[in-house]
Amino acid sequence: MKDHDTLEHRLTQQGISRRSFLKFCTAMASLMALPPGTAPAIAAALAQAKRPSVIWLSFQECTGCTESLTRSHSPTLESLIFDMISLDYHHTLQAASGFAAEKSREDAMKDFYGKYLLLVDGSIPTKDNGIYSTIAGRTNLDLLQEAAKGAAAIVAVGSCAAFGGLPMAKPNPTGAAPVSDLIKDKPIINISGCPPIPSVITGVLAHYLTFGELPALDELGRPKAFYGETIHDRCYRRPFYDQGKFAKTFDDEGARNGWCLYELGCKGPTTHNACATTKWNGGAGFPIEAGHGCLGCSEPNFWDAGSFYTPLAAPTSNIGAIAGAAALAGAAAAVALSAADRAKKKSLQQTHEKLTVKDISN
Amino acid sequence: MNPQELLLWVRGTGLQLATAVCVLGMTYRLLHLALLGRKKNLAEARGSEWGPGLRTMWRRSFVLPELSARGKFTVVAGYTFHFGFFITLLFLSQHIAMLRAVLGFGWPALPHSAIEIAAILTLAAMIALLVHRYMDPVKRMLSGFEDYLTWLLTFLPLLSGFMLLHGIGPAYTQMLTLHLLSVELLLIAIPFTKLAHMLTTFSARWYNGAFAGYKGVKA
Ligand code: SF4
Ligand code: SF4
Image (cartoon, rainbow over all chains, first blue to last red; front, side):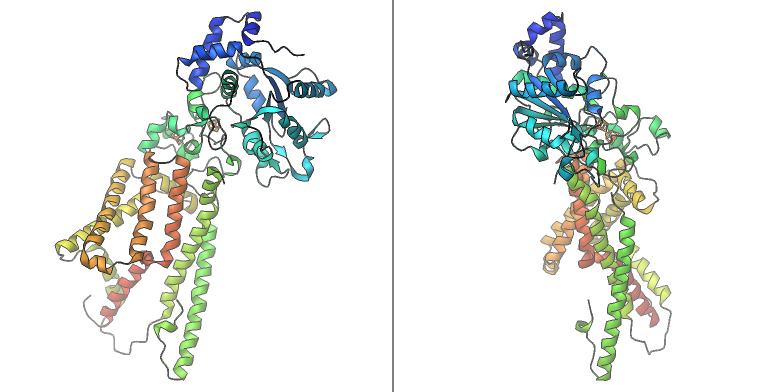
């Protein structure tokens, strides 16, 4: 049986001071845009929280989401969160392998039926009975459906699990689908991003531990606290956008002056994520600060939305060719109908009748 | 369809459809007009056609006649709206970025503050023209459903574009979708409504001038 005693007990055991624990709670409160006064309440709730069992299933993915969560510099909120949950199965992180690993998953599912949190990264191939990705001989679809049954809630980590992601890009050869397309009877929270920001993953888990429920979600199932605003809303280059000052290439004067990257394809205006405020790599910065536009990685379909380097205003399909074909068709129609009119006129002339406006094709 | 899929549709298939309808319709209309042909004029020509035709195109577009106060208002507000519309359309950096993607070349943009003034003047002129159309008994009698519809179809892209640029109203994704949709509606309506005048007006002016010129009348 796993250790599921209270967090306070475990933290004391590990020599983590109350001071650093409180610091963590304050950071969490601000991350989730809760009033600062709630930090002690979070601390009290977290201290008494039982460590929930967590099963993490990885499907069609690149391990980037796990990397994002584990490769942040330490000591981090992220490492603290691992002390708060009991990660009973994660086939990349766990020491056990083979039958032992699968057994730990089955045990956790049985022992904590109806109570465990199911974390999923990667999309689920559904074509040809899901044979395109299997673990221990079982399809991802099968594993997901089994694990979902006893889950209290499901957290879809990353854009693949949340929206389908790169595996779903046209022509979607494996029939990849997001969790929410396959599981309909459980609360699902989407933490999108390619990968998601580590502290957003921990923030959501902390919220769940503190309040015992999932946070408020937007229409795409993402926690509003992190995905309520766009990158553009909080971008430090925004004044340049408003003044119409745009970098035209990645190394022109505009780029050196830090002007807006809209014309270089920035998708910040239509992308909901916390990069501009929470930032990456322990607060070091976010992609736009490094001089590259936002790719829109936390939005559905970003993988099929055309080039990363064409501006949002540009069409995503070939307009010139369509216009050319339409002009030809219009010209052909005009020529054909005019010829018909002439023929009509001629035959009327022969019978000495008059061609009127009504006879002409419109 | 989630908001991103909808946006992708209006940036892709939707725009293709609207462009196809507009280009096909307008090519057909213009060419059909030209091919209608004119009856051979048996009278001896007393002047040329091309010179007076072109002159009339220019004069009716840019030389103002003596006008009454009511006429002045219509002309000034009308010109403000037409010029403002084209300045906003052709010189806003976002629009140039879009046109560059379609045409393969672009041109320098006007500063946002200049576009801002043009857009506000255009919106104001359009509202004033609508009010005048409704208040003035003659104009009102002459106006039908189509006149109000085409006004609306022209106004919506301007208004939604202004809101998009200023972050007024729904989120950017939805607002951009609405803006593009309104543009697509306008494109589709052009060949079927009086909006076709954006091209036929010039051939009509040429024809008027040429007609008079042939007779040796000073147009
Ligand atoms: S760089 Fe991108 S997110 Fe920032 S202001 Fe420009 S368009 Fe918006
Ligand atoms: S800036 Fe945009 S593309 Fe980059 S990580 Fe954030 S949401 Fe994703």
